[in-house]
Amino acid sequence: MKKTNAMRILDAAKVKYETKSYSDDGEHTLERGAAEKIATELGINPLQVFKTIVMRTETKEVVVFCQCAVHEINLKKARNACSAKEVTPVKPDELLGLTGYIRGGCSPLGMKRKFRTFIDESAKNFDKIYISAGMRGEQICLSPLDLQKVIDADFCDLVLE
Image (cartoon, rainbow, N blue to C red; front, side, top):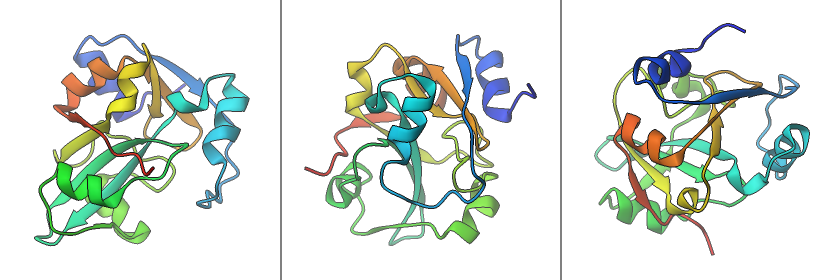
């Protein structure tokens, strides 16, 4: 398999990780249950699958959130985490230009620029979590603490209750 930028960053940081492939239909609609489908195909706990959400604050700062893919992000908690008055999701057609990634293949590792990043604290409940490898159909399995160190992220509560 071809190495992605996210994998090369982990290799350079000497972080242990595994990769897992899943089938992708190419459409990548934002449907409920997508994380559960991926988890079922990979034979993993869906609570260990984390999605990358890229948002913009009212000051136009780009911020990144790694959220358990089973849950919705709590916008109030996201605003508090990054000390913003407003956060809005980046439009899918802006994602590639900002991050270098397409929707469904956006990894918190290896974006075009370093953005402030926040990981939902539920990640610390697991020895390993799964994030996008930087392309659709590929996941990286790694320690949430290793991820936090490599991307210099903060852990915080992001779950919508």
